[in-house]
Length: 167
Image (cartoon, rainbow, N blue to C red):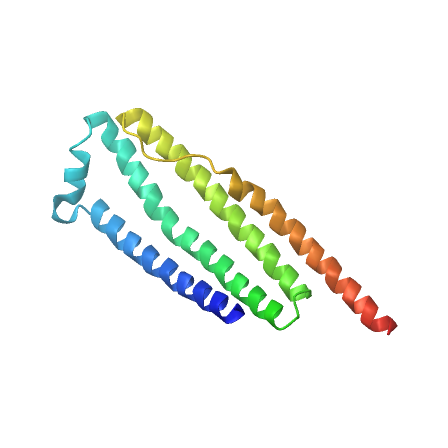
């Protein structure tokens, strides 16, 4: 069972990078106006909205790689956690550090989401079109959960070491 989970997470990580590369190419071509694509997209908006939509596209392009890297951190740390759990070594300082890293990565994703949300709302107001963003509380709840879980793992490690020392 654990090997299937690990394989699934590794495949997901590859898909993360493939999607990031595809999005980078798409938005780079769009913003470079390759084949008049940007002009076609912007032609659907009135002149005052062009700048807001262009800013929106630049923000999306600038967020692709940092978010892909944060997702990479989440997935690779989760693979290591599952691997250690399968080996019966879940409560280690290394896993506590992995959970803290996952907490920071998820915090970075949530902060990026707020930036994306701000530019989406701005572009929606100026253009009259809905640019699709809504606040997700799930990620914000998961951040402190990961930090608390890291603390629990650190405490569990200390308890296990104390127990081994008394036997």
